Amino acid sequence: MNIERSTAWREYLARNPLSRAHAARAAQRVPSGTSRSLLRHPPFPFYAREAHGVTSIDLDGNERIDFHNNYTTLIHGHGHPAVLEAITDQVARGTTYSAPGAQEYALAELLCGRITSVDQVVFNNSGTEAVMLALRIARAVTGRNRIGKFEGGYHGASDFVMVGGHGLPAVDDPVRVSQPAADVGGLPDAACADVVLMRYNDPQAVREAIAAHGDTLAAIIVEPILGAGGVIPATPEFLRVLREETARAGVVLICDEVITLRHALGGAQGYYGLDPDLTTMAKTIGGGFPVGAVGGKREFMRSLEADGSVANLGTFSANPVTMAAGLAAMTLLDEAAIAHLDRLGERARRGLAATIARHDLPAGVSGAGSLFQLHWTRAPLTCARGPATADATRNLATFLGLANRGVQLSMRGIGALSTPMQDQHVDRLVEAFEDFVGELRADGLV
Ligand SMILES: Cc1ncc(COP(=O)(O)O)c(C=O)c1O
Image (cartoon, rainbow, N blue to C red; front, side, top):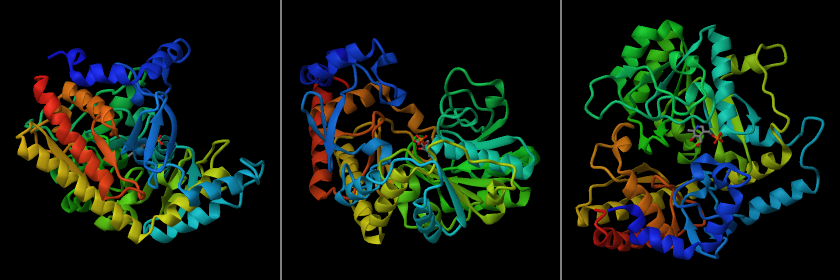
């Protein structure tokens, strides 16, 4: 069935007339009506008017429980009182300075105290910038040029990591190591030529890549839980082999914890016992403000000292409002908060999986800790190849159908819990999905 005739689509149009009008107006001045390419979807996005706690409210006054949390950033939901207080207190004393702010030290101290592999840290303005800087440090330290990454790994918007997210080999294709295709237009040829792509969760892929290319690789970058590629946790064996092989070949191991820092006090690397050379961070550590950070062992961070060859630039890097908000948010994120989030995550995964099993749907659920993803595929969810086979029409129908029922996931079905959430919020998600499945059936979409 054509999605435009589905109940989800028609009800979405009926519920969002003001967003529809705004989308048409905004598209005159902003391509497709929003600067954020990843938030565009047919027929048009609902535009946020305000958000409080677990709830976001759009231009038409529709309220939704926010399981999107700006792509996992808002770990305490919207406007947590302690974070708000830290922000307003700092704003009154200045939003940005012409001298280094004293505020960054406290957040640096907190992160270094929690993450074993991080002796020192610098802040910038996004995960994208953090990854760019980490790769640059790796090139400077090793004198090598090429980068290794994993299929489906998303590491922000810079040239050398905007490859290998799409056009992946088939699930049963035996190829383990390949040259990536570009994910977006406008990349230099080197972005594909200088990147070695490996299958995720495949120790043999790492061994093959290092054997063939180890002496030209500056770094391998890995997410300990694959995020945009399917919310798939790494196996301990995969990470162990990755650490061993990179150490042996003198390849800098960068652990991208932009999404996964929420997994344990010491990040997912602490949970897995992984000891990377450099770590990239963002999202949660900014308390809702733009942020990025690179941390790591002293021998690698040394290149950022005043007499080192690498520089961390950015007019707004380590701005005091982000530092204050981030410190408040990360202080709130203690062991008890993480345990609460993980329990809710388990409840969400179980509830969705039970609905899938009850209706024998061609779908699956992945995730770990406080992250989950619903996939419209029966393919295995152990690397990015399975999630890549998900049915795009059902994905969109589900996103719209849940939005109509007062629940927001990401367009591809990713959810992230926030600390103000309780069982009842997760149960609302599961009930909304159960209810929506009946509609999908009636519409002949499943
Ligand atoms: C693992 C990972 N690394 C890097 C980034 C880029 O972060 P930002 O969007 O802050 O540039 C993201 C963003 O989703 C991410 O998931």
